[in-house]
Image (cartoon, rainbow, N blue to C red; front, side, top):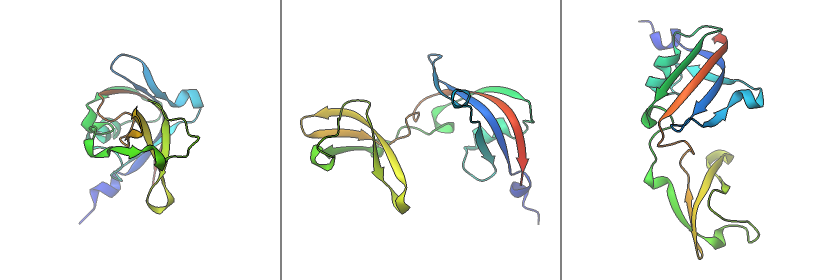
Length: 147
């Protein structure tokens, strides 16, 4: 029996703009000059995202819009935490929009965004900053890598 998912796995090296519903750009690889690598077939992308990418070739330009569940996922209320100010360094400036970093499993870092401060209570959102949003992706394929 042949594993078709392995046959279809490849990577795209592409420049990408991620555009919000209001037309503003949330992120762009062109500003850094470093294209992204998107791995198709390894489970790191949603099926809807992979469907948009699977037939692209070097030089292709493709624009598509995905609902939140197919992009960075829905916002998860369980990822919003209320923490006491004493858990942060005393000299850390804590205000809405500040990104703080927490130690994750295996030494990884988990970013969180301060959503609210009320006295000694700090609301931190550990959802991806683009979770819960419908997004438009503008891709330009630089190269295709087959493994």
